[in-house]
Length: 498
Image (tube, rainbow, N blue to C red; front, side):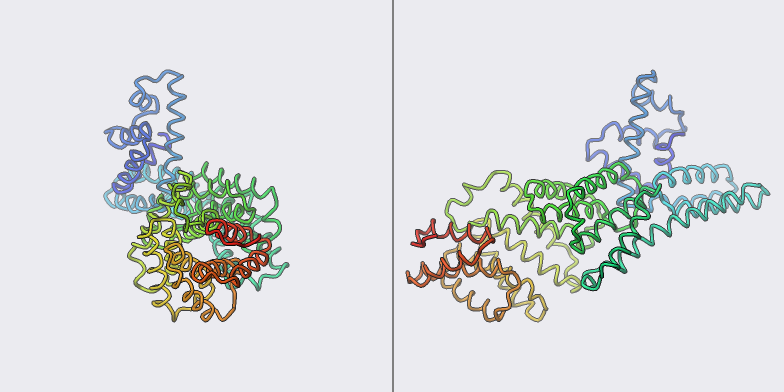
């Protein structure tokens, strides 16, 4: 029997239904035909017979196509490995049940299939248990192969230990609050730990180790992360993951999204807008692939949200213009609408009430409010209401580092709604709350620009012309601020000599 036959026959009813529906929904017609033919056949067909059932004949040319189909379908089972990495485990119980009924041959068939498929998908925990069965069976039947199987158990345990040690290393040594405590010597030690496994024969281990290496480099903003060759290394890592998507990582580990997150972070740091938007589009297209995110906060996706919201608010920030929507490129409009819908979907999850994710909830509300500013006046009014409610509802929560960003959006909202008095009173609140402790200088200058413009539009005083000019000069290398002030001055015909 070929591997895809064994795999399909090992699936529980639930996992087969999930896999077959996935193939249908992704228009994988031939793989769907293959797995359903295998599943519903009353006999276990030889390869040529199965080929004829799928293609109508088993000529040499057709058999090559069939072989490609079987490999392709097995790769598509990455849907199962990523969503249900324990999908083979129930077969251990099946083996026990068959033996308890005296059906030894059937039990050994299932065990052989399980061993073969688990080896290919690198499900080492299943391999450990099924190989223990083989070893013990050899012992009680006085076979000389018992020691061989015990050695295989030892090998699989070591592989699982390596995989777990990489996860442990990532959790113990790389966490946000400990960033400042990582010395150069410790960083070198960490990189040496990951490097010892980057060429490992196990695909899941070498992919995990390579991710760990570049995660550490990005985490520390290490100069090596920003080298040109890092782009190729991350592209190779993504390619190797996709070519081996059928191998198993720990459940709840969204390895692909984390790899894309590294590439996105590199693009952000390199100000590579075109590549950044390509990565974001890719992340958007696969964001719902893993079903367990319905129950948790998708942290890599939140990073994607933050990058998108920041980009749109910087590059398409002139929401105060009457012709704003007419000048927006069509693809940007679509991207903004998609992001708005994704944020609404995330905020609608029933996971926010227990208080475990308050800071992330505040983050999401800020991103959502920012995107609402690109809509009509109803959306803008909704945006400022969400921001005002957030500032009031969570005033006891320590989220000062988000305050300047929240006030940027709030003042942009009031300004584009032409509620200039609200801009002025909100500016005074901002100055009082932050007590001049600026978190992000660019945000502070942006707030100043809107405030001075609102003051001028309200009272036409010359002092605000001078303050706008001073803010423009102070902006220096903050191109988005200088561009904003230039646009405000031009659009509202403010006599500022820039």
